[in-house]
Image (cartoon, rainbow, N blue to C red; front, side, top):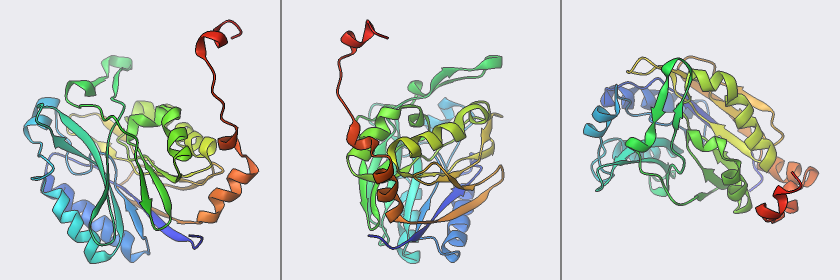
Length: 280
């Protein structure tokens, strides 16, 4: 498909009131729809953030019981738009959670699910630390979803640091990459723009990266700055630090144009690490 279309990224400050979060994001989705968006992307953990992992687990739902899923399925069908539910915490029989993205089509059907592959287990300065592995069970499958505009490669937040994932998504047919996130302010200020632009440049893909903004219930700050980046690495829109949405016109033909100019995806080579060590 070569016709242009509009994509919006919702920027949101989620708290621990599920109904309030659903209402706030619904209003932003409606506003983006009125502005002409046909694909609307929500950030990671858009429906619920808790003060600690124990309370997050206690308040989690299974896929079958999560109230956000039927709500947004009905909204997608009503507005006749595609919705990326950036991620929901989905309770598993193991007692842990999947951090799961859902892609809904314009009829409200779930056309793709993606469970976050990489868990954010890091220790930052000033005692700031995160251990997603304590509550999150890692996914085991990369996902490229079929849309009317081409392949959409799914990922979540910390995944952005693993370039091989996006290479694989592009090689599997992704022309667009989704990176819903809740980046910390510390890591966001240092790396967010660079990483998102790099994923676009190295794959010749559009990137849609909706983010959380503001302060989490536990007092830690999220970075905001939702981004939309074209295949040449040019920032089309930046959400700044406040709730709202950004939108850009997307030209599918631009993907092929950039990939012809820099055909790096055609130049991938296999190599063996042990042989390479001696010459590095």
